[in-house]
Image (cartoon, one colour):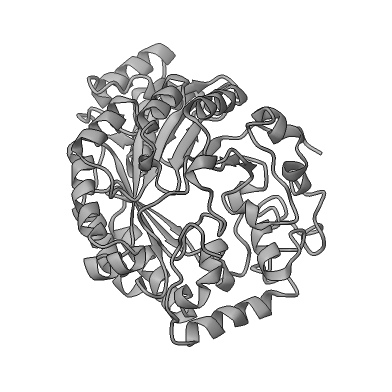
Length: 95
Length: 363
């Protein structure tokens, strides 16, 4: 087993195997399914996760979101880091 | 009463057949025979009905679900219907080819059970010679195929001394998640309670071990932990509440609010053979009897935790008190709680009696 993965700007995040991002049409919400767990995504989390394709780095994701929302980069970076680290700690994200 | 939400998860118990004979098996004492099992077509229809209701996850379980040759077919059907598919298995019947076919069919995740950290205890507790070694092999095959793996570890007085070794084994097998669950006392486990019940000291040591391991292994492995509720202060939120989030279909098609519900013999349960699943969920007598809070006696009725633990477990109230509508005696507010703690202390202080192994046709 690997050591704890810690996110940085060079990380290339993707959803871990055994998880699934999908729209739950019965409850009108986006979710990530994982073993015995279900995470309901808010709009920000969804924006971030939809960009975690295993190709884009954190730098690229943050740049894109900062441009899209005309928001300060450091603010976006903080949100992205904390959300992805939290998901990585829960085994949902590979970094 | 609030509008009834659709269930999130379906436990599909494909069969009660199993090569293992664990004395704490969650199946009922009266096991269903192969001839009573739903057919492939009946299961597919039930899966379609579940997906249409809003079920998101399906857990294929048993008995041992891999004894059904149509398991791949059912996984594919559920996967194509948009469900997250999980296999809960003892593993001993799997080989590399079958694992490949299950993954190819769309399996998302596997939960593999171990009975102990070493062959002597594992084979003795599971009642299956060679089982432990086979499971180790199968765990490696599952990981070699790239499949995420949870180890299911049921713990009790006869394997708790190996808890550290069990966690180390899970890491060695590259598991992503460990489910450490103290035995819950229904059905077979209720019958074997004296052989399984830990002392309070054993429980406290186990909880300390798990807490330390969680901290140490943060972000490397997820550890879920279920405590034995005889020693609890407040009851578990059993199934997240009766008929709130979860349903179970038995091998013969009975639709249950939890896998132990048939032990509540004061209720009768409908079958997917006779009635649409959504109708059973919304309108059946058994699902509505203990749904929500309207049925609650005191002290639950006025308790500020009534929508947190939903009165605890109906099966436990029935098993201990003969009344499924009573407050779960695991709650310290129940007038019967002290008697429950006494049962646990008496059982755990005795020398452990021999197991009564789970067998089809036992009485």
